[in-house]
Amino acid sequence: MNLFSLIKEDFSNVKRNDPALHSTFELFFNYPGLWALFFYRIAHWLYTRKLRFIPRLISAVGMFLTMIDIHPGATIGRRVFIDHGLGVVIGETSVIGDDVIIYQQVTLGGVRTSRNKRHPTIGNNVVIGAGAKVLGDIHVGDGAKIGANSVVVKDVPVFSTAIGIPARVIECKEKGSRLSHDIIPDINKEIFEYLLKRIEVLENALPKTKQEAIRKKDYELEEIYNKFIQSMD
Image (cartoon, rainbow, N blue to C red; front, side, top):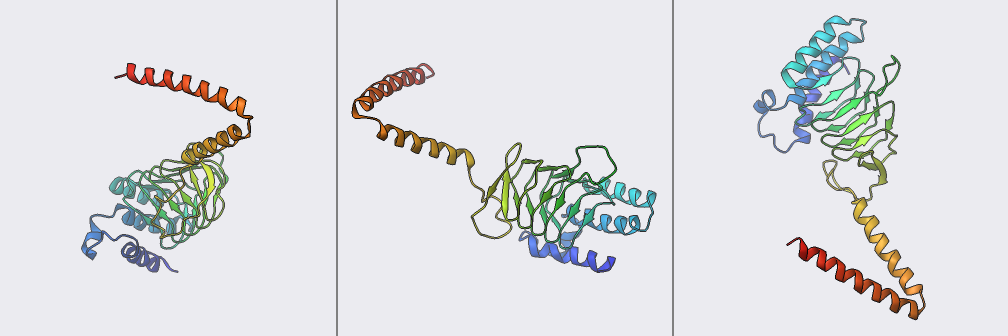
């Protein structure tokens, strides 16, 4: 696609992704992510033609107006939607696929100062939650989700979810719309439930005489716990 077709598609893409849009007039005032892409498309087009100063100047103007920092050297695919967008940073060697959704305060950053590939590669149909940091020359697979405020420093497989600091990669079995980035497993809850079930199995495996002794100790611990709770009232 040529430059003008990409820009036109960016504008029409907002209507597809944001149910809060009620009129085309709002596009000109309430969507800094859209205008950040507008400045980026022009700057990147010039950057690929071996210009350096003018693209960086356009990028600086765009950052001043939108508070979104996109390096003109980054590669951004089609129908990318930056929602709200305040504080988003996309580094020089970042590669972003098609149909990606990026929320506010996301950073696609580097972890070294070398001039080679040092920023992440994001696949198609990826959702990156608010405040997430994706760092280094890593790959986020197609259809993956990055949980809000996660710090991702390792590859994320396709159709999986990364959450936490540092992010842990888990399988996302829930199916829904791409905007359902709140549907992610509660790892701490699942581990806690697993431990309770494991303790129950071990207790049942013990002889009855041992079980009685354990119940006695459990009662003593319960008494200590109750006294501790009462002391805090």
